Image (tube, rainbow, N blue to C red; front, side, top):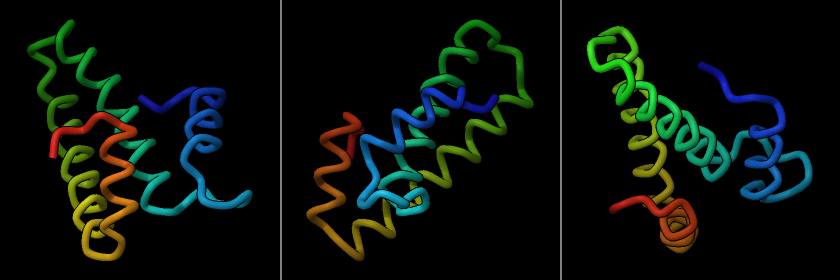
Length: 89
């Protein structure tokens, strides 16, 4: 499931680094976190949906790789993003 345009725009405005930023690690992690939250709710309602579970695991893995990259490149931005998104790390 993709995010609605309005929700995606809100996330972009909250986490972008400059006006035309849509691909920085901070923005990507925020968008993936929104998708993870949606998919987690979906999995609670449909526990036997194994195809969606596989997609959720791929999204979580991609977010983890982006967070690892951000931690290596800019530890301060990483810590701020973790605090803003309330992620456990």
